[in-house]
Amino acid sequence: MPTDDPRFGCEACGALAVQVPEWSHDESLITCGGCGATLAAIRELRERLIAALEEYEDQPAKRSERDRAQEP
Image (cartoon, rainbow, N blue to C red; front, side, top):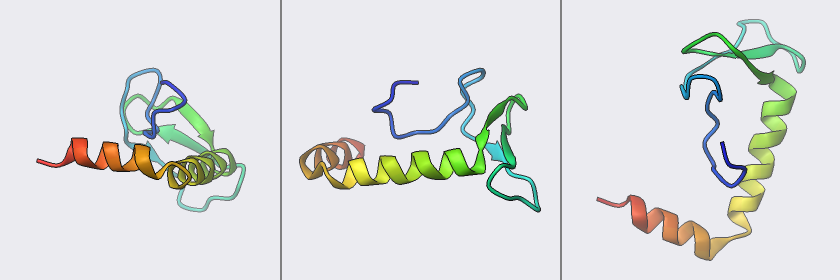
């Protein structure tokens, strides 16, 4: 998946569903809800999400183009 793609999907099967352990900590592994492949540790996913949000917020023109493209 390209790094500028805001989605976080499974590289093995493309599913966007994830499974998170009920009692989790930073090193708990998140797995794909489609095929069961390991996606990342919770800490890593949290860091990726924060970085993606910060990048998204720093690019208002790009955000507006994406928002307009998704409108019905």
